[in-house]
Image (cartoon, rainbow, N blue to C red; front, top):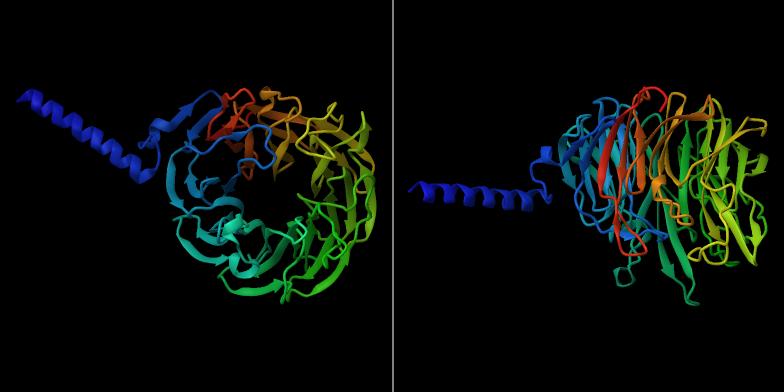
Length: 467
């Protein structure tokens, strides 16, 4: 009888484990078992996701945001899951947003709402209650720019910003195949109130026939700016300019700016910028051709610096693309990413560009202050106090796997404050408001020899003194 009771207990335990697995979608149903602790902090397993090739251009996405109101971390993943974690790594709630991948997020000024975008057949834009995880409202990008599942031309919400009233401004796009076989785009910006009212769309009665990636808004000057990111430039395009300035009250176009090109490029592409200064007087931008630029708030260029000059080596143009640009209290900050071959980004380059994977700082007059070079791409930045946190991902040219991790850089001192290592590339990062805590999302990658590197984990670190 005792043997029967013992066997029955084991069967019940096994059934419970399987049931929890199917309910939670996690191979570790009891969350505590997925938390690992070390001397610097903790890491939490986020569930299985497909691992992609280390050298692949499009890589695994993730988001993490610090919620100062609750001293928690909001985490979004490639598999469309959204969770809230405390500083001990315990999951407070979890929600699956569907079959899409979470691509971008911002948090309201009071920390009560999160606005999230996804890439999916519908391309949903969500407003979520941060405390409970409840969806308050949503819009489908497919309703504004279409969708074509037959060729996987899915809409994606790629960037969201908010103003002081928590009205949000969201860029969305999808690709299309044109009659000549080239790739085109369908894009639009939506302005939506905190409560979910559609305020305006730009353009009102058509779509932008270009790839738009970044946008920013500023209350001090009442402007929204959108940058163009289309590498395939065509004469018949209507939206051929680089920057579009929009009245944030009514969505009307105020003016647009075409930024001159540099050899060997045929147009100017911006992907992680531009961004207004806090006072609304300036606009910082970085272009894929390696330039860092400062404009006034109407788009007049004040100065331009070649932070990564395209160089011809053995018949191939190589360059470290410029991406991020911010006006900080310590100067104008630009970043560059991996070295790429101008003619075919998938091909290796003969050498690594000396300006790759770097932070550059200039003063407002354009005078050089310093360069700091990391061992891998700075995939995402977050600012707090005098610090910038950098998610250090892959170096597809050197394959230096020791580069992966998180860097906290002191902008005032021009040197690192702290660094933390991870096995796999880090794709998202966030700093607490006081700069004392750091969270990052690590993702797995498949190496050329077929070996799996890293895992899908949330890391939370305490930042002490210099490390």
